[in-house]
Image 1 (cartoon, helix red, strand yellow):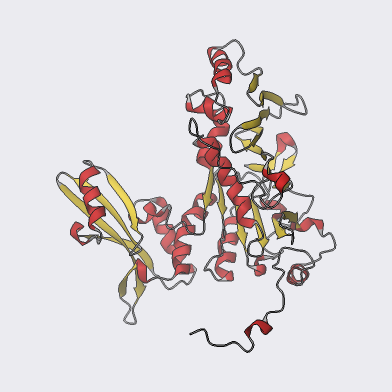
Image 2 (tube, helix red, strand yellow):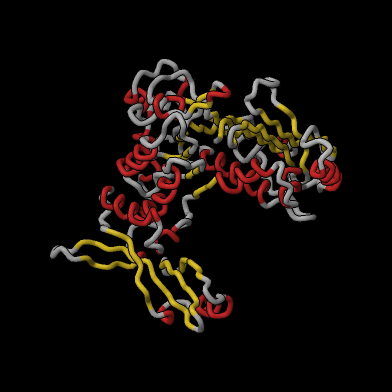
Amino acid sequence: MLINFTVENWMSFRDSATLSMVASEEKQHGHRVPTLNAYNLSVLPIGVIYGGNASGKTNLLKALNFAKKLIVKGSDDDGRIPTIPFMTNSTSCNLPTRFHFELLIDDAVYEYSFSVTNSAVIEEKLIIDTGDGGSDDGQVLFNRQDNTIDIFDIGKDTEEYHYLKTLAKLTRSNQLFLTSVCIQNITILRPIYNWFLDKLTLVAPDARFGPFKIFFDEGHPFYKKINEMLSCLDVGVTRIGVEEIPFESIPRQVIKNQLETYLNEGQSTIFMDVLSNMHYIVTRKGYELIAKKLFTYHQRCDGNEEKFDMCLESDGLRRVIELLPSFLDLSHNSSQKIYVIDDADLGLHTLITHSLLDAYLNTCSASSRSQLLLTTHDALLIDNDLLRCDEMWFVERNFDGPSHLMSICQYIDVTDDKDIVKRHLRGKMGGIPKTQFLPNFFCNLDSPF
């Protein structure tokens, strides 16, 4: 679970910005807030970030994505680190970008931080707190200042410990030490690496059908559930299904040539043809390539079904189909995933977004370990019946450029959701576009055509 995330000098965030998932003393919806008894801590299952266009909401999520890629994939031997510091201030351009994470992984809390420029890792530190009543500051596992990496009591006098000491000397200046250790298959630091690799999932607004393999597998436990949910959401579709089609009917010859060349016996591949927005799965059986295509089904007036190509469906329906696997993955009892969804309401009616969030939150309890972070423009989701005040955040960009992240909890005189929405839209709480009077721009225009 994510406990705290801080970023500084990244894109529009010049100053330090912290997204805290630590629950306040608020009592509302307390039954669904996960608790960490060993740390006397409660961690929120959801964080919703509101803000105007170009306020910096997406930049905050891009910071998470950058950190994940740098940790999991590392950097090239002589490659530059693709940092994007705050650019409209000459001082900031030359300062490092800083990241700080506090994570619950299994039964331990890890505090991992690093600072990078576009050419080198400046600082890196990892602390672990097992909640056993030891040091209040936890145990430092390693600490890095420039090219000096100090290894502390990580399995001291073991073979892995001595290997770590060697890696500390060999780690490149543009590579995180955590990454160097884990790509060498040393297991001792693997839990935090695996959290970024497997637990943290980011869904961009233009990510189409990332997990849509589910829809080709009628035996998948989510397959039936998703079709049931589509009916409940009133999106006009009775179900999603697949049908076998002739391989020759796949529209693009270059794709067919690649499949014929590289697909081995028994292998399957799933892909979307961007030009036609069609979704296929192709499997090789002997010398034959078997193709299946994804369809939607609508109910006809006579009670039968009519089959539709996916390209005929609205962006909103495709967005629902894209998001449903994520919400189901979050909601099963043993889930420890964290999904980060940018523009979660894109193309969706407020009531559909509300229903998805409500369904997820109804599965949360004190023992839950999954989380959902999302950005939205939808002010109607500022709703105390759905969310706690400490689960709602605003991002606002000043006229001179920097973005700021603010919790609604800062506004202690807010009494109900109607008051919050009204004050928000009037600009009393930030997080809205600072538009100016436009009508004069449309007066007395000569035709440009």
